[in-house]
Structure formats: structure tokens, C-alpha cells
Image 1 (tube, one colour):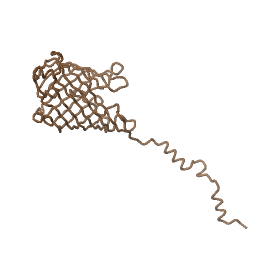
Image 2 (image 1 turned 180 degrees about the vertical axis):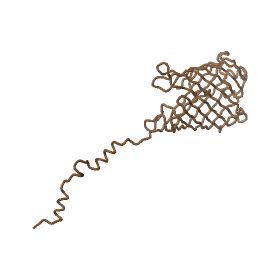
Image 3 (image 1 turned 135 degrees about the horizontal axis):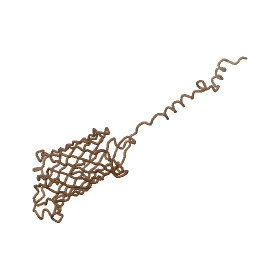
Image 4 (image 1 turned 45 degrees about the vertical axis):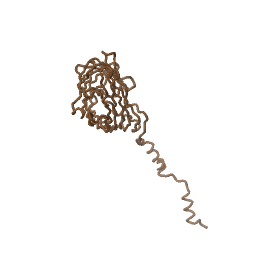
Length: 303
């Protein structure tokens, strides 16, 4: 009896025929090869305590958080009882707390960063007595959407004090200069060696409302070409910082710094050596009503 047609068809379908013409791999294999050959999709990662700060401090800002030792020769000053020869000591740093960026792109994304600083002036002609000092701290959220642009929003606190020896010698009492503000800033680098910035701060807590007011504006320009000397670690820098406060009727405070910057091998924390010219209100908050002008030379270490 002949085999039924359905049985023959069933047997035919069970035979091990190759897919394609015998030379092409199965479609599943092609898909796997294409997947393996495709570049991996970009992934974003969190980084605790990032080494690079997305929004660096302003170089010539006389109140920035850094380590520094400055010898000041005051030419004009309204601060009675203080000599013209002073030493300024700074201690502090701007540091990254938490970053969120594309894998392998440490210089982009968003970042939470902080500032902690001490700024004090000491009288070289009066037993190096402390004239006054400010305690500074703050936090900000920075965003760098492009390599030439950085933005930040945050808060800053300044609590100023008069030195004990200065009070004993001159009888000057503390006016209670304490300021807390919210701020927004923008940094732009149109060329590799040039950077400009502008920032606005608005105080939401003033300890002495009779003398202090809310507004603050700061802007500046920085020039720092790639280092060319001493194994390409040493190079020049120049920086200008201008600030003004509503409580001073927006009178401008000018700082100019010129000098050399040394980049340590494998680390982005440079030493700066240079001269400084300042014309404006006292950098110590308790003496903000006193205007002064000075020349100085100093060493600053951006930790």
C-alpha cells in the first residue's frame, strides 16, 4: 500500500535542511554579531568626591577659599588703628562632593561641590596682632553642558569677626557682619587660554540689617595659557576680579593678579606665585565700610 501523502510530508519536514544556501549563518547568529560589533550605549555614573571641580573658584577673588600667604603694603586705608604692613592668611578649599556624568567624561555632567575657608589679616607692626577674620562656607550645584561653559547655583555664608587684640588696643566693637546668600554664576571660555565669568548673589539673612543690604555682583576675566617652561609645568597667568555690593551703593572693588602658575605632575592643583593690586572696601567683612588700596605679593595653593 503506498505511503499516505501526509506521512511523506511529515517525514520531509523532519529532515535536517540548512538555512539559506549553506554558506550564510543563521539569522540569530547575524543578530548576535551585529550586537557585539555595535558601540556600547553611553552610561551615566555617580562619583563620590570627584577630583576635578566643574566650576573652579575665581583666581583673583580676594575672598576665595584657598591656601595662601600674602604680604600686604597698604597705601591708603580708612581702618584706624591698623598699620600699613600686614600679613594675610587664607586656609580653605573648593572640593567636589558628588558628581554625575557620562562614563569616562569626568569634566562634564553635574556636580555638588562645597567651599570652606578662613581669611584673616594680621598687623606686622603691632606684634602681628589679628585685625580681623572671616569664616566662609557654602555649597553649589554645578553643570557643565559644554567644555567651554559652566554654570552654578548655590548658597554662601560669611561670618566676620574683629581680632581680640585689635579690640583691646582700639576699642572697636563688632558690628555683627554675617551674611547668608543664594547665588548664581556663569563661566565661559571662548578660547583655550581665556575665561570670563559673572555672578549674582542675593542675601536672605543679614545679621545687621541697619548697615547691610542684599545685592552682590561679581565678574572678571582670567588669562592662563598652557604651561611652556620647566617640563611644561610652569607658565604665566593674569586675572581680574571686580565686585560690588548694594550696601556700598554698588561701588566697585578691583583686584588684579599677575604671576606664575606651577602645575604639579599628575595633579590638577597648582601653586601660584605673584603680585596683587587691590582697590576697594576692606576684604574683612567687619570693616566693609572702610576703603583701602594696597599692593601685595603672595603664594596661593589651590588644594
